[in-house]
Length: 408
Image 1 (tube, rainbow, N blue to C red):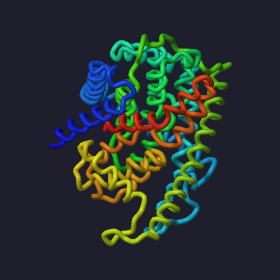
Image 2 (image 1 turned 180 degrees about the vertical axis):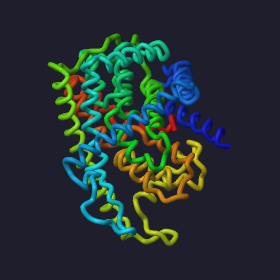
Image 3 (image 1 turned 45 degrees about the vertical axis):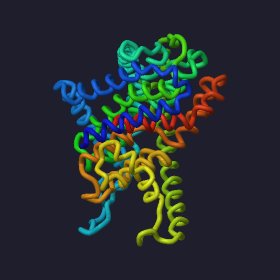
Image 4 (image 1 turned 180 degrees about the horizontal axis):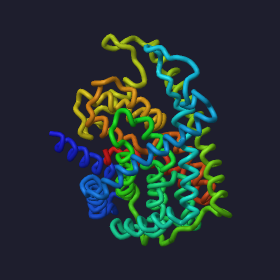
């Protein structure tokens, strides 16, 4: 039954994308099927090939090391608020003293700094070039788009396009849309560790799944975007362009730390605002008459509207509304808020299988705030394409969401 649900879901997604395509007659069905096959093949290789699976588990252990190292720093700076020893005795029935801001989020400083260091040492550029070559060979995309797609495994939605900045103005409408969709459908290495910290108590080997989700969403994003906005003409060629200049390793660490500070402040501010907005909306909705003896709230509305979509992902109908609420929360607010909600679900609300499906479906930046980031960021990288970015914005959110749903 689950297999039939999944097949129906895949068929529904592809049919829907074809129906709303800008140029239905120019949709390359063969390329779409190849893209789906590549996505499935990559997922099978990661999950079934022993040494690759072991490498992903090793990455999970690496996050634990990073978490412990970060905790040493936060404990030194913030004391017990940052995870250090408490100067008082906790009651047995006392509240959880975990602080997202002072214990989990500071990991973005460490990961951001290490990412820049790996960039300076030439390790990340080498990996990006290798992945770019593989994507160009399998999915028949241009060199510029291949570099951007490969970089999205590690970099954010604005950092990856910097690697092809000289080519951005020359990209076709389809390629520009694919760049935007890739930004929406994937995450970045900087926040993967944060997601893992949030979900480590509810999903085993969570980082391996997060990395897998981000990788398999790349062919999904390319496939979905090329159906919605088909490629016309030859793809744009290009190669990786180094976007950063460092004097030495310490300079790279400093630059990465500063970037991490900006990301930290951005995440904290957005979470405060979005949690407050959800509370305000629920207060207003609570004034309406009850339906079936329960108050109306945002989560309940989203759960009802999006339940058929989550059912098509292979989730049992009795759990579909809970899963749909998470999916809607991620799209309207952001994925971090949705992951926090997922981690807080009471025992028995959804099965471990559904929890894992939702991890894959939520693992992407497709939300309204990301649209603002893309309009602002890509408008600076390629000012002449700003109007195209604006016109494709909401379609990119849709494509990014469908890509992660396809991965789930």
